Image (cartoon, rainbow, N blue to C red; front, side):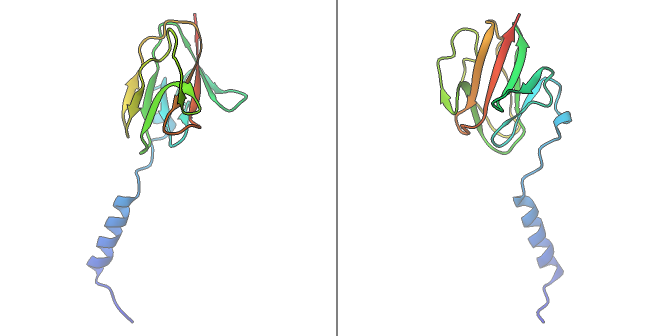
Length: 137
């Protein structure tokens, strides 16, 4: 029977532990009002007025003048902007106009949303990562 020195086993365990990604913080660890971002979806548990629509897409209702804050709490890069199914569209007035790349642990707050209506957001890297923002008075 071949025996391995303890240091060899310990070194292998340390290397293996470094390859495992850190767990995302629990939903309630984010400040209220922050939209979390997983691998291929938005996490809306920390948003006051948000729900899943009938099509399974998160619907986030905000008031005119509010800002949205996104936190990438996954290890995946996201590029978010106006659009659907990974394809960007003309944002129109009052929608999220900048295309924003978020790396791991990045936080981004939009400008104040000034136009009432329904606006679509997507991730160009993950086409199934979509959300609707409803701006009310």
